[in-house]
Length: 278
Ligand code: ADE
Image (cartoon, rainbow, N blue to C red; front, side, top):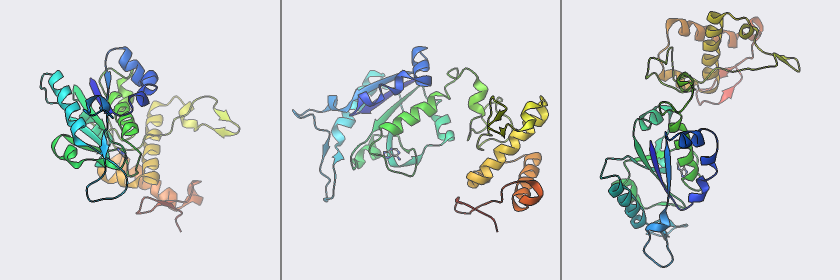
């Protein structure tokens, strides 16, 4: 898979390309990440990429010409192939695991990193095929967002993760392949490693039992519980098996009657904020 990243800060990406998954995927040749300096596509002495906004207001806006020129140069180089062009912006569609799974199918992606107050809207309207946001908060630019998108997508490219199943078991994964069983789209269950007793904080006994059936059931329960406590809105999007539905009912009952079950009193608020149940 090839990523073409258009940015005014190509050096921003150098360190993230030298560590972990992105480095491994690049070195093994599964992924190529090409950085393009937007200023190389300017045509004035000052290599300017931005200008004042029409209608007034604070800040500067990225001019359309260098961005169009950059994408046209990339298109020419790829022989006119239809490549998704993604503009990273807080006004975009939210990046989710499902969106990342779609992107992971493309052999090539162009990422446009905006800066300052924004990017001339004609880029979103006539050049980008997608406008993507990584969350409901504002960053100073699209570079971090592009890095997040690449990391999320690259781990889904077949063969990049050593163990294919581990991407399928990630939080938010949706069923796509036979590797992925059970209800997906939930948060991941908790994980533990040695020591089994850390300062009196013990690892749940079932994980030491060697009983795979019980371990599987415990993991399912804890994934459901975490999701219900921290992201209850995700439960509306998944279809649960009868067993999982029963587990969820039990989790809710236990939270309402903590004294009987030795659990923390809790109920997720409709707003997604956590509050103590009365
Ligand atoms: N640029 C600034 N904020 C952003 C966000 N939340 N997502 C993507 N790009 C951005």
